[in-house]
Length: 117
Image 1: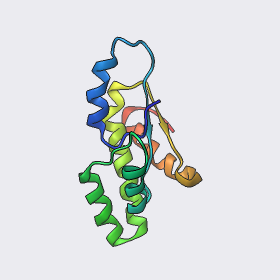
Image 2: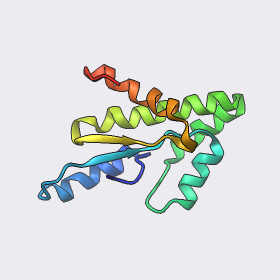
Image 3: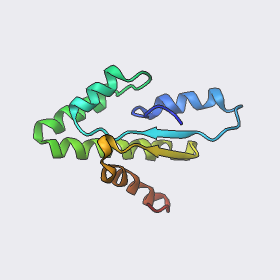
């Protein structure tokens, strides 16, 4: 299970380096719930890196409302799943602050791939 994937390209660059290791790769996904949460993940969580592009999106959303920031964080997490799904064997989606409904919203993107939640 990886650290939370905020920058799918980092994971995609890493996978070829371990392709000789025959174990399932489960991508960690953490839906950001606010700009403060994004800043914390970026600055305080070892191995987590929130790209500036996503930080800017979270800043813009936070200016609108906390609900919009939460929705933007869910969209970012869904994008990470869409970009990495072909290359990993599964996902471990965290429920930030115990809010399982956020995780379920993130996982709804799997319906695009014929999966269910």
